[in-house]
Amino acid sequence: MTQWIDVRSDTVTHPTPAMRAAMANAPVGDDVYGDDPTVAALEQRAAEVLGKDAALFVPTGTFGNQLALFTHCDQGDEVIAGEDSHIVWHEVGAASVIAGVNLRPIPAPRGVLAPDEIRRRIRPAGDIHLPHTRLLCLENAYSGGQVVSVADSAAAWDVAQEAGLKVHLDGARLFNAAAALDVPARDIARFADSVMFCLSKGLAAPVGSMLVGEAGFIEIARKKRKLMGGGLRQAGVLAAPGLIALNEMSQRLGEDHANARLLAQHLGDIRGIEINEEALDINMVWFRLTAPVDVDALMAGLLARGIKANPPEQGLMRLVTHWQVGKTEVARIADAFEALLAA
Image 1 (cartoon, one colour):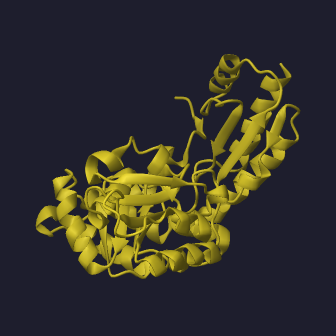
Image 2: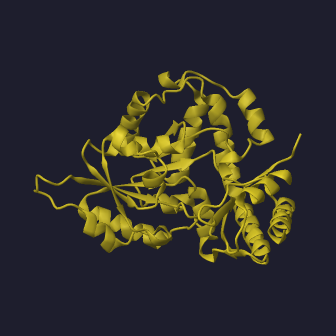
Image 3: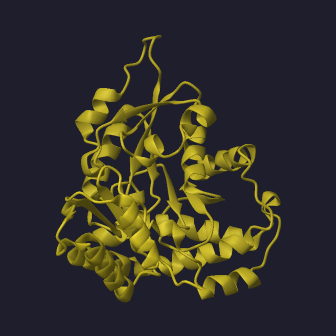
């Protein structure tokens, strides 16, 4: 059996042996009835870690983000979000289908939504032609691999408070951002009314994300989760690895970041590769192929060497490290690129 090195994303992570054991032994109950003790423990722990009242276990990150929009907003409301954020680009237009809201994209260089740019998009009240601006969506870490500072998060929060907007944070890789900033995750989460974070990316749980916020918000979201088809039954077998992800795997993300920087260093020494040094905050390596390349041959060559990667888009590639990509794998990846580009 081929031992693949998979750097397509940190969503490809396999559950750890400890997670598999926890799944096998998890106490369970019917979570729609509120009877699953393992889910309850995960929700309580998630709320504690982020300094919020309550939390809700949901199947995916997209589900969690869209549930937040659905809970915060009424149909026809407007939501301000970064123009290349995950909610705008990669959630299949769900905001218009599920919550029935209009997305107002704004520039977000390095993931930062500048206060003046937010203010310019807030609709004035009293005009019957205009939608009501209800929600500001932030993202950290951002989709391009950049981390937004606590100060920039606070500045966006302040604008929302001035205007009476709620704030939702897409924190799919929140713990990567916290590790990069060397702050507790709650220091980022404090500048949002609701936060979604994924257990199934670099934290290595096989399934699931968390939505956290005020108790009243989560109570409404729990009912709307059922409406969206997310009412789970004996979900403790999924929550058990989530607890390990939250308590243990979140503490080792710095290793993934260091391995990403090491991979960037090795790749940067190869002729024909130009590293995007401004996108090395977390576990992602973005780079441009600067010479003409037969992409099909490149991808076939990587596969032949046991490496799974996504092909470049307009010459730009992304490789993602995680708990199954260590220094040995980094060296193999760099050697493969050097050989293939030389050929």
